[in-house]
Image 1 (cartoon, rainbow, N blue to C red):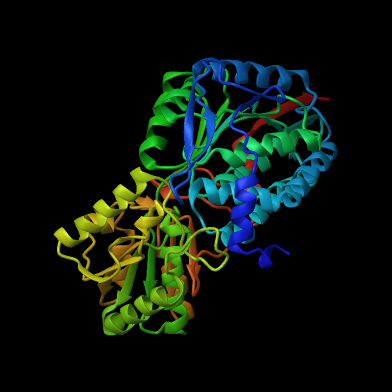
Image 2: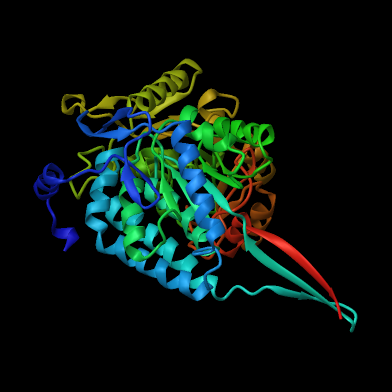
Length: 499
């Protein structure tokens, strides 16, 4: 049904959409305590979508106090895992039932193509919730190996109140990566969506309540990082803070944790991921199409974007031509509500200014512009940039070292395996990497050499909920997805009994 919806249909639905902009605390929508709001502006055309509650410290105090009271009551934290599973399964089902509404909110709010919102973001969010729900009554505690007259128990307990600060590029999906394991393990959550894209987080709060989640277990506080985000990070009664976003903010959250109650801090931060293509790649056309997707998907606003394309010198010119051709053929910017659009709008004016500034920096530093480099579709009032390719880049240039978070690709050549690995690892980040080769031994050696949390071989951006996701170095700590994510939301307790 969704695939047959035209742009005109989506625009009509958008015009009729009732958008909720209030905070959600203790099971109900409410204004910010201060009464302050801010405009939610669509990057598609500059239209104001809604007035959003601008929460601050007073709202954080209220939400955390409520979350703590509900946690201490045990209504959720001490309920049977099988019971929590059923509630979360209903929550996942409701996300799927409201998929078109949620996809439309996501696209209007941050500019991604509606086809991606429908096919990637909303199904992925529902899957993340459902996967964590399904797992929770299958995770066992332990009995230590002890002497015959002792019993050692190792049990996991929910950590308490979790503050989840999530990014604007995959608003619902990234929130669900946190909500799934946090709720499944019995915690209360205060969710702080980005002020750039708060709409789906606000909407799903009511769906969680409808699914049977007790009031106060999930609270949503829209607002700015320097106000409500900071208040949550410094709050003495928040036990854990989980974050996806920039490395700069991630570092600040660690400082706030140290200045307050030493709350646990789990961070998924920036990336400058190398996509390494050797001359013996099994299919250069497939590698080129993947390289194009790796930088253009979601407008390049992806923490794992393959923004550094490392190509063996002997095939560099031919391969760059293939990548440019793939981008021109399949990745032109278009209206995000057109189901055929592959590249939508950048999230806001700050982001488009940043991307254009980096494109100019690439020119200034001597890189060769192969494709793109321009803002387009300005007559729409929207924020669109062509996918851009720079060749003849060296790894010391700004466009090769700093995270741009836009569709800007830096092509760097190398001569041999050791040089490729040295360039790939010459970064403060370590989130993801890919390698293309038909040599199985070389693939394994590269996977071991690359200092990254995810390494993909002969593909880009592989994996699912069964595999952990996170970074080395300044890309963060801890892992989302898989059973390893549960470690972030639980405390280990040892109980030793003398018989």
